[in-house]
Length: 103
Image (cartoon, rainbow, N blue to C red; front, top):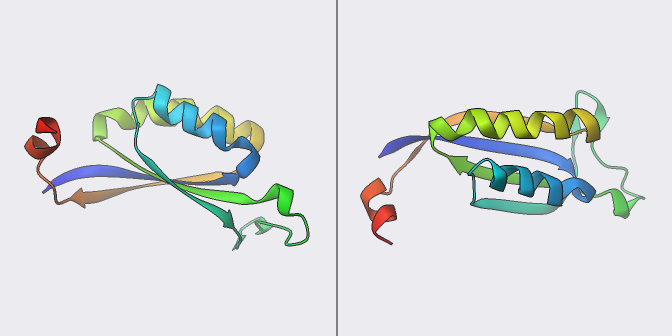
């Protein structure tokens, strides 16, 4: 097991391409996207259910701790400009790093 960082982003689907490009540019290449996310946060409803063209997406990505700073530096301007939120947490990955390197 080893420590990795989990990056969770909730943002408008219209900006999804920019967010994924930003992660890729930061060296964070793997991600999961869950579309059509609705919820309520500090700002109120995250989605107006009558306006499906403004659907939100939930992006989950994992990276090594040293990749986190570039990822945040690339994501922050996008989220500040277009809206959305990002959460980062420490998690443990159970696969061996050697197994990943040998693939």
